[in-house]
Amino acid sequence: MRDLVERDFVEGVVGGARAPSGGAKARRSVTLNQAESPLGWLRARGLVDARQFEAGERLRGDYEMAALPARITMAWSERVDGARGAGGGLDPTLAQIAAKRRFDAAIDAVGKGLRDVLWRVICAGEALPVAEKALGWPQRAGRLVLTLALDRLADFYGLR
Image 1 (cartoon, rainbow, N blue to C red):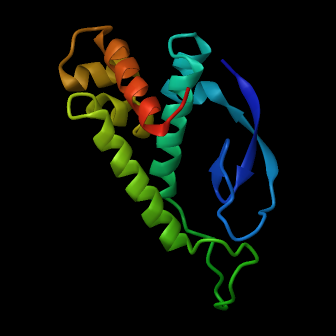
Image 2: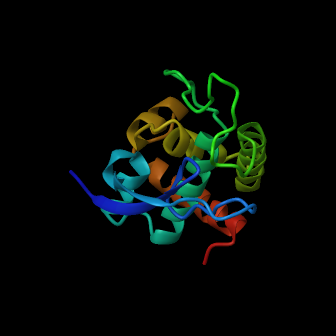
């Protein structure tokens, strides 16, 4: 299933990202298939609402910006000649540290019993049945727990 949507792209973060203070950043538009992630799949079927989806996307954005997932390719962002890129803004290392702090604070705000399913589905990209099995939960219990976790996450982010 393809659920294509246009999003703004800024500083390596897709969708709703704000440019760091320090000047306007060049924006461009990218096409995303929202049905690619387990959260997108749930959203496309009306199993999570827009507020929950936005909270999950913010968490995933911080997770990826903090470079917490394993790298599998070369990082082409640094120049070999040592010259600074035209982007300016936050140093990539400082941006990673800030994203890691936001990620840790969000996960802590969700709570001990809910963070496991949140991390597995949002960050690791596991399907709900896989996460339920790994956590030893009964079938279809994961969606209920995930929606509770996403509601707490949305409260943490101040989403309405």
